[in-house]
Image (cartoon, rainbow, N blue to C red; front, top):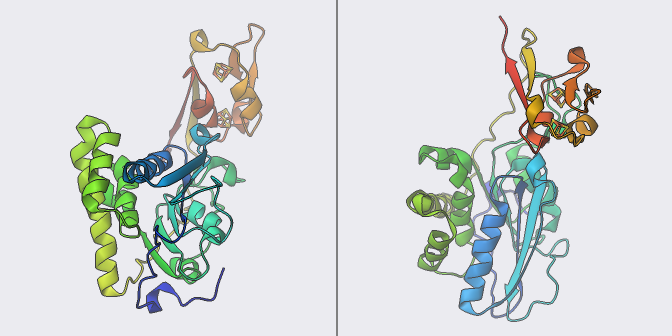
Length: 307
Ligand code: SF4
Ligand code: SF4
């Protein structure tokens, strides 16, 4: 962290990384399913097409469980290590707010550029109380507090930008557009690589998402890039306990035991036929981890509001 002026006071963008002089380091972080790897692959392909040396590394072991996913991309004339040392990232692209904060220390202290979707995705294991409506344990930093630690930053609700285009899964492409303003590749080259990387029927929406993200940052620069106010974390409201129903399809259960071992409340077990059953319904919080983890879709969790 550094004592650079806050984003609201910054008047001049940080100098752009210069590929001719040094290795450029871009770190991309998010949670499973957000498209971290797609951003990383597009950037790596762009570098490859230009003839730069490029190394890409990624960690996504817990991706399917809502866990953190990150990727390091390093490019330039020569690149030796695939990982970015702490304090050496030229750009940090975060697809989720808390994941962005987690990696802030990797940014270059004065000239690092922070690009972040303010959308908050609270991982189930981050909450001690997993009942619907319970208060969440999540990063309490406000947007200005976080941005005070970076030389230049753009935090905005990229997911809503993509949703307005009809496909909220294109939020990663909105952030690609924002990233494109920080690196020395032509917009047309970015668009060509994106068009080849996404499913054919989503090319149009992804290209528009890219342009919106790029335009957002360019407009912010003109305005002195003042941050949007952070979307507040919804306060827990008193409410009647919901009705929770765990629906098990015995014929699909292959007795792997994953859900039994990973249910945080220990309320599942295998019966005498080694088929899963809900053995302690009162303890079930409806967190849905069992539904997400079951490789055979044998569990569905229904949580319905009661009046
Ligand atoms: S994870 Fe699915 S297949 Fe495995 S024990 Fe549980 S319900 Fe059965
Ligand atoms: S049974 Fe499923 S929904 Fe209920 S607490 Fe366990 S993992 Fe969560």
